[in-house]
Amino acid sequence: MQGLQRYKYLYLMFIPVLVYYIVFCYAPMINPQTGGILMAFKQHHLTKPFSEWEWVGLKYFEMMWRKPDFWIAFRNTITISFARLIFEFPVPILLAFILNEVASTKFRRFCQTVFTFPNFLSWVLVIGLLRDLLQVEGLVNGIITSLGGRPYQFLANSSVFSNYALLILTSLFKNVGWASIIYLAAIASIDPTLYEAAKVDGANRWQCIRYVTWPGIKSTTVVLLILQCGNILNGNFDQIFNLVNGVNRDVIEILDVYIYRYAFQQSINQSFAAASGLFKAVISFSLLIAANQIARALGEERLF
Image (cartoon, rainbow, N blue to C red; front, side):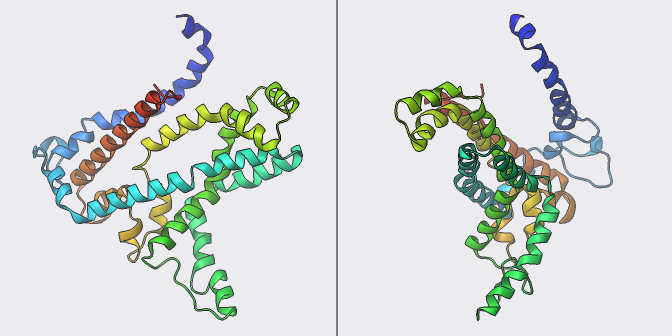
């Protein structure tokens, strides 16, 4: 009760978030009208209400297991997510370190605004700009041809390197500034006397970052890394849905786009899509628990 009284305002701020997840995430899972996750265990019928659908057990999970295109999407999701983890996760931390070292407050705020602004652009707009730049008659190919080169199909080729580079670069452009805000807030909470003591001991800027700044934000980084592990199978639907086409589908189509296709576009089968989504949710939850347990074993900060 003392904790409840002490953090009452934090609990009050948490109520809208709790209501959101109950209404839009948990309630649809058990909705008797639409079936929720039970849909994965019933025979799909477009013309019948859910209550009249026949129970089929694990039929759609077995179908999922036999479909080669499902495992291609699963492989792409894992590969893209690990690429994001390696190339995207450290960049906001580095940006926060760099911005923290900028002496001019006005220039630092200007840089923060410039880096954060793309986060408020929709993926439709970002991919539209990308198409204008990289299409055959676009600016980039215009520069290449003016230098004597041949136009390159950036957006319609099956090259793994080219497609993954586009995914990571556009994601960094849109999200790096926003993601760095959390690390900047963590850096701002570090006691300034620690920096003063380090400088008195003769530490330079690099040593201040290594022995003061990094330990100060390490727990925040570990918690965000655990959350990122839980989202490994969420490969950023909006970005890839707008980039995928018939040529690069086998390289960048992820589970979310695959499930969407089966739920609303290709031979509509919502039971199969529900089974695929349930499989993805179970794997994601298992990865989150595993990452949390690894952090606990290493003595680092953890979620629970």
